[in-house]
Amino acid sequence: MTTTRVINSFLLFALTSITTLAQQISFKSEADRNQVSLGEAFSVGFFIESNTDSYSIDRPMKYPDHKGLQVVGEQRSQNISYVNGKGVIEDGIILSFVAEKEGKYQIGAAKVVINGKTYTSKPISITVKEAGMAHSNFRRSGVNQQPVFLESKVSKTNPYVNEQVGLSVKLYAKDLSYLNRKQNFRQGNLDGLSPKIVKSSPENIKQEIVAGKQYFSEEIARYYVFPQKPGKIEIDPFSVDVILPSTYGIEPVEVRSNSVTITAKALPEEGKPKNFNGAVGQFKLNTTVDKKELSTNESVNYDVEVVGSGNFNSINLPEVKTPKEIEKFSPKKRDAYKTYDTGMKGKVAEQTVLVPNSEGSYTISPVEFSYFDPVKEQYVTLKSDSVNLKVNQSEDSENSKSTEIANSSSGNPFSDIIENVNDNKQWLLFTGSLVSIVALGFFFFKKKKKSGEINNDVEEEIIKPINETLDHSTNDKFKPQKQKFVIVEKSEISADLIIQDLEELQQKINTEDPKEFYKLQEKILSNVAMKKTNTDLAHFSEDLITNKLTNTAIDAEIISQWKLLLSNAQKAKYAFGGLNQDLEDVYQETVLIVEELMSK
Image 1: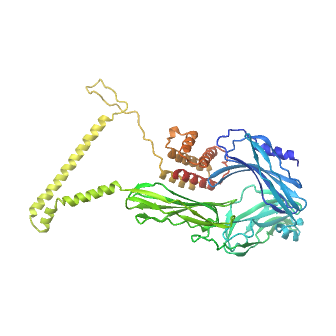
Image 2 (image 1 turned 135 degrees about the vertical axis):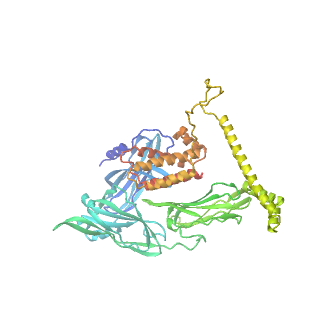
Image 3 (image 1 turned 60 degrees about the horizontal axis):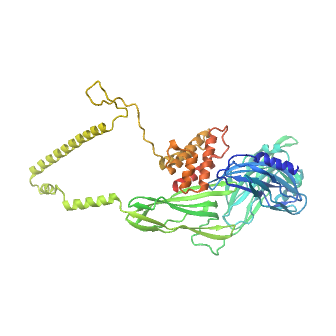
């Protein structure tokens, strides 16, 4: 395969010419591994990443130098993903290389010019060694003669306790049809590990070179496992039945993978914070309140969330500490994390309702969260800012106090009568007074009702029908005709309505017609933007909403993600067969964007 052919293949899928409004573009190279066995193929991808597909290639990509490596395969890659609330469109090409002898190799930097700007990828270094651990067990049993085999592999063999480790199980076959003949996959023993299964990606069949022979490979299972204790942890072989030809026709043959050993390291005791509870990964801490000035007996929502990637199962959010004058209710927890191809990502959030009982100025102390970063190999403690609340005396409380003072000073108007009754005196006077009270109440009731009728009449005279005209057939100055027009008051978009729609959207994830899901998603995204910008439907436009959101200091990435989700929802309503997206992922991204817009 020539270099020119590779360049042309790349340009065929990358060339477009659209506008470049609010684009975020990057160009990167990425290898699936940096150390391989002799004769084993590896892949390097060259990807254009952007928040939109509106870009154009001005100059063909300069193919990087790859001296000593042979290109043995290529495939196109297109992917739309949502990571930490950001929509990313990834477009590129993946090349497969193989080396014929041991040594260290480098794939140089690739260059491409997009919208007049030159982007350069980073060079990739590859080490090729003699038969490695990955396929050694198959070579011993004669892999060159095996039509199909199974391989287990981990991303890291010496992780820390609670650090996430990728576990991949691949099926290799010389004949592509064998990959469609697998059945009865059996999981190996994962004792000592906390496993999370990743949904298998469609179309993950590749061509790879193993022991100098070409195989078709398919990842049939992927996990992220978290070691629960230090020391050696053995992952037993996985197995699957593959229907293969035999002496007696065709029959299922059990194919077993290699076993894998992980040696987990204990978390260091030195520098461990007192509030550390086992979280391992990379995280951020966010705290917000929905108001900073309020009245007594009025509630305020205090939100605490930890966002990032790692083992969310071991995260306990810090407790919110408040002054004794502020009543605190039990927090409401919400988990919004998921295991993606690149690991477990998302957030854990808690909302605590606070109600001040007395007026004054109060300070809510900062909260702290500690975790262990396995990349930096050190503990990190995050601390929020303190929150100051100004509490005013509510009008209801003032009125209540005034009423109590008035009642105490004036006394009970019927106290003399009640006292006489208690003393069994002036019984007739009590009876007469009681009748007088009832009569007096009836008189006031009638008067109030009559007054209300009069007020209604006056209101009807003032607020006349829109089409009121002069009628010359009678002596009446004006005679209202039948009203032909109705003024409908604009309905308000409430937070409760948006929350109800989100709950309904979650129920539509498994609907037979995805268009119903996208219709409701479009409504939710439009409503939350209109509520945030105080825009009615008659004046709704994407450009107007974008400008208003920008003026309200909303982060540009959030606006970009909102536009991307809205655009996809609108496209999906009319796209034949939908957009082939995971609706669970789309739902989670929609929830995150709604939360961001409603909390700012």
